[in-house]
Image 1 (cartoon, rainbow, N blue to C red):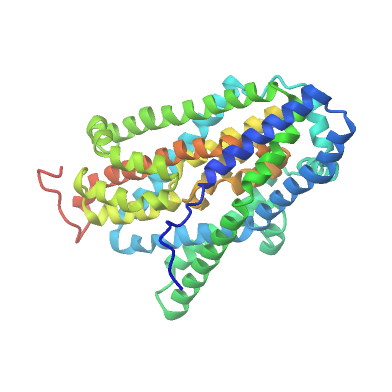
Image 2 (image 1 turned 90 degrees about the horizontal axis):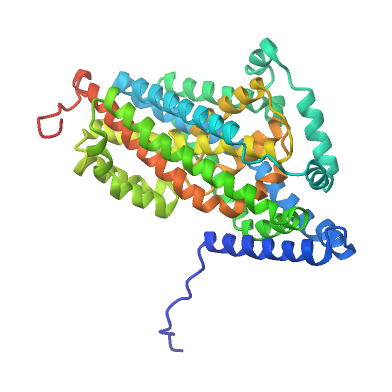
Length: 442
C-alpha cells in the first residue's frame, strides 16, 4: 500500500465560515423579506421550526458553559497573582493599572454608544415581533429584570449568602464573580502546600475543559449566524445593515481612542515612557494580535517585543504579560459594554444609570475573566444581556462582524498589556531583588 503524496486538505478558517454564514443568511433573509414578505407561510414555518430552534440551541450551549468558564478563569487569573509576595507592589500596581484602564475603557465605550446611539431607529413593532419568536424566554428575561434589586440592596446582594443559588441565576452573576475573586485571593493568601497546589491545578483543569467545550460550541457559529441573520434580515430588511454598520463604527472608534489617546496619556504621565517610542516598538505584537485575534497566541511575541524592543526587565514583563493575557482585557471590556447597550437600544430596552453601572462593573470583572482566545467574550456578552433584560438572542446581530471586531479589540488588549508592563517597570528599582535598569534600557 503506497502513501499518498497529495498535500493534506487545509480546513477553511472559522472566521471565513462565519462570514459565509453571515452573507448567506443575510441574503436569504433579504430575499424572504422583499420577495415574499415576513408574513409568508413558508417563512414563518422555516423560522419557527428550523432557524429559531437551532439558534436557541446554540445560545443554550453557550449559557451552559458560562458558570464554569467565568468562575475558573477568574480564580486562575487572580491566583496567578501569587507572585505578588515575591515581587511586592509590582503585582498590586499591575492590578491597579488593569482595573483603572479597564474602567476607563468601559466608561469611554458607554459614553460613545449613548452619544451616537447606533441601535436607535428600529420600528418597535418589528423588534417586538423578533422577541415574540422566543416568547417564553423573553417573558422570563423581562420578569427577572423587573425583580432586580436597586440601591443599597443591589450592592448588598453582590456578596452572596448562597453561592450555589447565585451560580444558578443569571441575575446573580455579580455575586458569583465576587465569590470567584475572593476564592482566588484566598488561594493567593494561603500557605503553599500540596493541597493548595492540587486545588489550583484542579481549577486550571476546569478552565481548560471549559475552553475546549466552548471551542466545540463555537464551531457551530457559522450555522447559528446563518439562522440569526435569516431571522433578523427577514424581519428588518436593509435597516439591519445600517444599524450594524453604525455599531461597528462606534466600537472601532472607541477602541482607537482608548488605544491612541488613553494609553498614550497613561504611558507619558504614569509610566514616564515616550508614547511614540512605545508604539514603534510594539508594532510586531500589534500585527500578531490583529491577525490571530488571540491574546494567548500573541503572548510569545509580546514577551519577545518586551525584551528586544522595549528593553523591559524580565521580572516585570514575564509577570505582567502572562497575567495580562487573561486578566487585562481593556478592549474586550469596552466591546462588551458597547454591545450590550447597542442591543438594548436595538430592542427598545431602556437601561437606567444604575443598570448601566452594573453593566460597567460586570464588564470590568468580565475583562479579568474573559479567556484570551478568539470569541472568548461572547458568553459574557450573552450573560450580561440576560442580566439587564436585553434579549440574548440579539447576540446573533454581532456574530457576523465579531471576528473583525475581535481582531481590533485583541490588538488593544495586547497593546495594553505591554503598556502596563512599561508603566510598572518604572518602579522596578524600588523592588528588592529585582534587576536594575541601565541607561540603555531606561
